[in-house]
Image: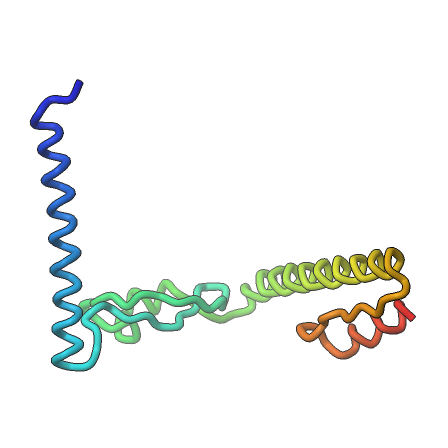
Length: 140
């Protein structure tokens, strides 16, 4: 079924991966003892072309990004061309928020009809006070 060399190659690869993992752990422990910081690359908060923030791994570059003229010429993080995409993203977030509020509201109504004698509390802390007051007016 399998030849001996195939099994041996798989075992060698697995043992090499284990060795590399052990060496990496040792290097991290040693650098933390020496300097108090990890030797692994850190993360920083970066923005993509639409202005959406995300965590990005730091990599070693020859030139820093602020000195790289090619990067500065090809990347524009602001401008009127972004307004359309920002509007669409904002609309998507508002629709999702409204969907969640409506679902919560309908669940509250269903439970109120099913159990009219109990007073159910609705957790609306993540929504604004105006939305909460509208919900209270509709349920009363």
